Amino acid sequence: MPTTPHSRFRVLLKWALSIAGIGILLYVGYFYYSLATGGDRMTEVCRQMKPGMPVDQLIALASEHGLGPSMPKPDTKLTYFAELRSFGRHACRVELENGVVKSATYNYAD
Image (cartoon, rainbow, N blue to C red; front, side, top):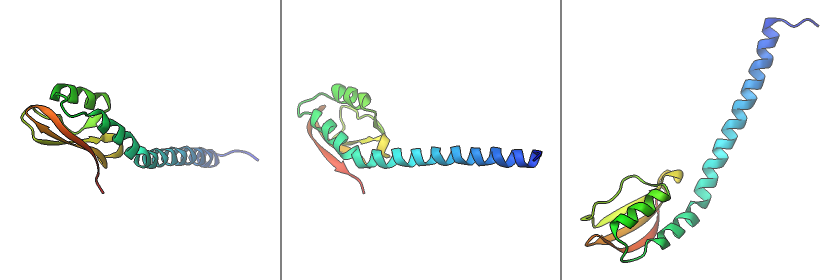
């Protein structure tokens, strides 16, 4: 059976759609994995934010773990460090006093 440009196009389209479908499935799987395991990751990070830790060390720890969206200034009283990987759903609520950590607790934004 001779191949025509139309039949070759259909074969290429079929392969392209299959590859795109696999890519979408991998992305969705990674997204749900990030949401499902984010609580454990952020609980551990919040434990590392000990009372008495200076803001400079807090900022370094947040940067190391890819937390955001912004970094506190020394005069900040309350801030949240959200895990960007889970789109901010898992975070640490950090209370500051005189430029040091007063307390840090895990926070789930639903």
